[in-house]
Image (cartoon, rainbow, N blue to C red):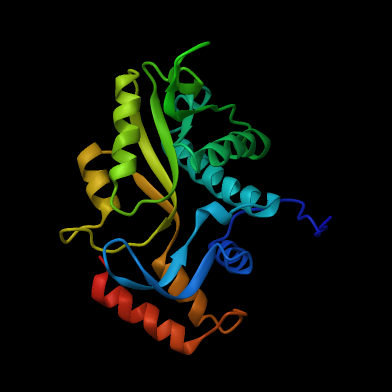
Length: 233
């Protein structure tokens, strides 16, 4: 059994998240061929967010961002906050975030998720958890690459009578899609909702340039900066 010293109040910071992601191989530097054919100097695998420490920190980040959004809206409808995770990776994210919202912000959010295949027995359907009918729902995701999966989630919610209030992702690559805008920028414009990220490529570059970073690497930093200049928005 692995034991670590548990922080009393694991507040989210991009620097801490990046370091923990590197320690757990969630974030890797190197050369990775993307579906687009681009050679990326880094890769983020949310499927490896598989420890209590990592999930807690990520959930705190989502929760803090949501609480900040509620505060910016003067606390409107806090008790009606509904958050949604897309199957499958989004399911543990949204469950942990609901807990973090309650424990750290006193917000009793409702949460739900979708099944990949609709259930034909029992309660049936492809939605589980909170009833989203007539609700404006915040969607949590790891990384938006082309935006295809997120558009499918939006369609599922709309079919259930819900709307999307906003989207929060763990990482924004901030790079061009098929046109001059990123997938996140296109989604924000199409849906006319805020799309926020906890960490982006500029945070990764800052981390690599930080004299106090244990992963400080001038060669990798140069590759990241070149990639940002070539494909960034």
